[in-house]
Image (cartoon, rainbow, N blue to C red; front, side, top):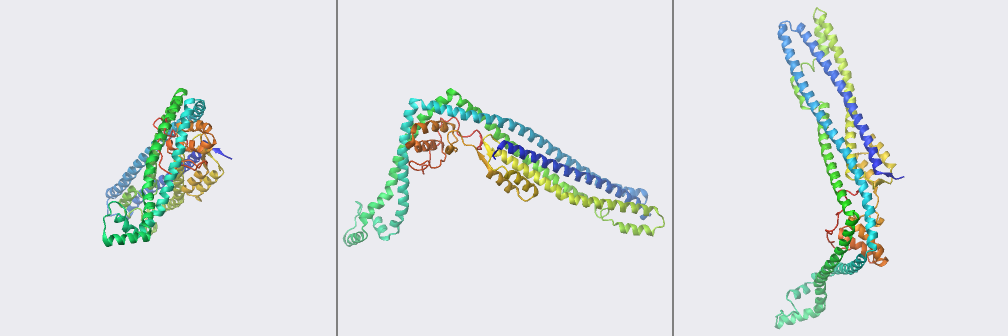
Length: 507
């Protein structure tokens, strides 16, 4: 059962919110474990410092504390620098996301207004068409324009046929060395001045290949299409002049009933929506950049990690508990044994946390990826105008199935988007189902009037006539062939709008 594009958009938006929240929860869980590990590392450093007092009796206590404190201070400074950068990135990301939410709300408001303008535009276009049907001047000029279009169309077809014939036959002449020889000598022309034996031989060759007859056909194929094209250009200019008069009448009626004003308002809203959508796309890229850097930091591959690793060396990170236990057993006291046991417990807890981090890392990265790709889908959906009032989905059950497959990893982001595209449709404009490609409001109003006035015999000319002025493509309408095979004239300057309200097809 078909479902509205706006409803699908809301569903995708809800799924995006769920994925974003899940990714944030995963990041928070990882952050809590990392903070606990940092506390454990700090405790381990203190324990090692205490243990060093027993292992290094020849050093003064002040020297030992100084060495460890310097190392600990350097590591804490690096950690502080990293946390500051993390907060900065998170703040930037959150601020951008807040801007995105505000822009999306504005887009929702503009989209609602645009949908209303689309409905109003269609109603007024239909009203203009009905007015034009009773306008005597429009009827007369439309009749002349359609007759001119019909003649123009036949001429264009003839030119196309002649060009096709020339393309097929001229190579045969070019392949004949004898024909090219006589043609180059200008045989049979007033400029031919050969005499004697050369003239005799040329006459013999001409007779052998029937050059005079061939020359007539060659000249026809070579020279006639350009001459006919000149006539076609004149007929096209006449047609454009007549259609310009027809469009001027439509423009006058559109002004009177308020269609022109509605088109202006819709164009303004459409420009605002296009601008907002581009702004959101730009903000989304910046948010993604900040999030990617955070992910690198979370994965422990950032510059802060490398700096700490260099500073830490092998002193703390690779001090084996077994070696400490062995050294502690060699000393007579028991205080160092207790410290070593404490270090061992800390190492055991850190190993457990490290295992948890490793298992959570993949889940966090997967959730971040899905949330990011879901955001891409939502942005592409909106950029394509799939959330407009004219948008609907014919095969909606495929969308939830695709969502499930995408979340489980069975479908990648491109496959997900392809499923959406294949199910999506735009409702045709009011004038006719077969004319849904007409973007120009002027063209729709004129065609709506012309089709009834022209009658069956000239309906194809009416479609082609609007096609020429709108620079669009129609399906074949029968009754004299399909769309003209030659270049179209540019859209009329009298048109109130050159197309949809937005750069997409939904408005």
